[in-house]
Image (cartoon, rainbow, N blue to C red; front, side):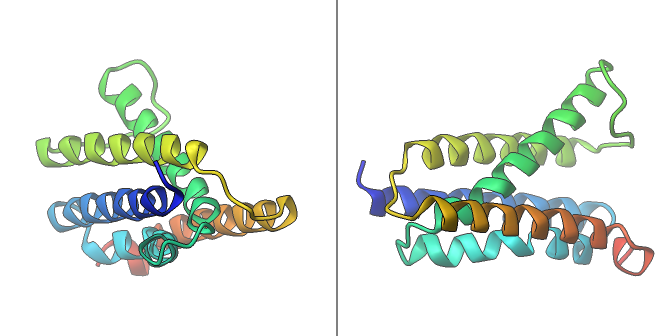
Length: 148
């Protein structure tokens, strides 16, 4: 598959995660929380749709983050671990499957995508967007955002 097609796939995986998390927000805590949480993914969407190879390095930390969160939720739902807790509606559970699948496809696509980006720039982008993903997730838990 050509890099242009792979960057497009990265963008679509990000859009799938955004859409699923917005559905979760609409049936649970409020959509603002999920808008904040998905903010870093929008950069990857824009870059991917423009067929920019940097989309790989921008999206990779979010794919890892969201897959990890989904695994924690699945472990809780199966009764195997209590890393996260809560009550999950059938809609929310269905959305975890979409987020997890999009994250897996996104990760596989990222690992298959070859770029000419220097290692320094790749590491910088990865760390910057990993930090941004963690920061936006933390901000989304503040009471002023979490319940709107």
